[in-house]
Amino acid sequence: MGTTEIIISLIGGFFAGVLNTMAGFGSIISLAIYMDVLNLPGHLANATNRVNVLASSTMGTATFYKNGRLEMQKAKWIILWVFIGAMIGVYLATQIDAEGFKEAFKYLLVAILFVLLLNPKKFINPDQSRAVSSPWLTIPIYIAMGVYAGFLQAGFGVVYLLVLVIMSRFDIIEGSAVKIATVAIYTLVIVVIFQLNGMIMWREGLMLATGQAVGGYIAARNMTKFEGANKWAYRFIVLIVVAVIIKNFELWKYFM
Image: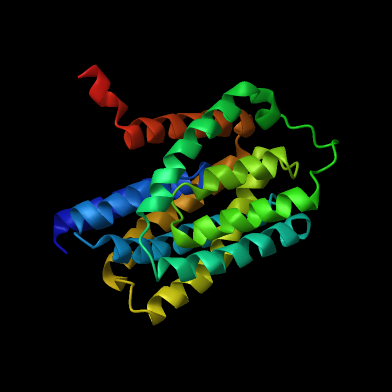
């Protein structure tokens, strides 16, 4: 790796860590760096990406916990179901190509955007006095999301956060803390699995991990202390989803 690649990896990793902690889709930045700057094949980029995801999620989890915003007791069963799904997903990732998942996910993003815009108050100030949704509904959803997370990771955070807020009655900040803790737990095991399959490029992974850990720490620290963080986190999520929809559907071509 030359000086230019190192600088891009550190800066890109930093912004990926901020995105992953506040909303999600940080992997779009890191995967682009792995494939387009460092020239890793797609399946190795997907595996190596988990090293920097582990770094930022671990740092973010510790920061949320330190500031009293991580409700592990409330979220323990949710985390378990996602973890089970993630183990299925990582097995699939060692066996098949990711293009089908990526194609389906971009259409799911459009539905996510409509849900976000339909009732902003539901996300900014959720009614936590309402009963949580039935386990018969939430458990299959959490397992399915875990499968996607283990398989591809990119974009998982936004969908997971929405379900935590809408169905399990977390506010956005507490939901972000649970999201990051969940990612840290299953990613630790996934890194081991990918390593046993010889799919992780450690030099490249640790370079992005350094930047991403710093980004995850700064984002988590400010989210727990900033007044009105729920409102700004919501706006940030909407902005990221819109940007990713534009990228995935190549909408800029219609204006050129």
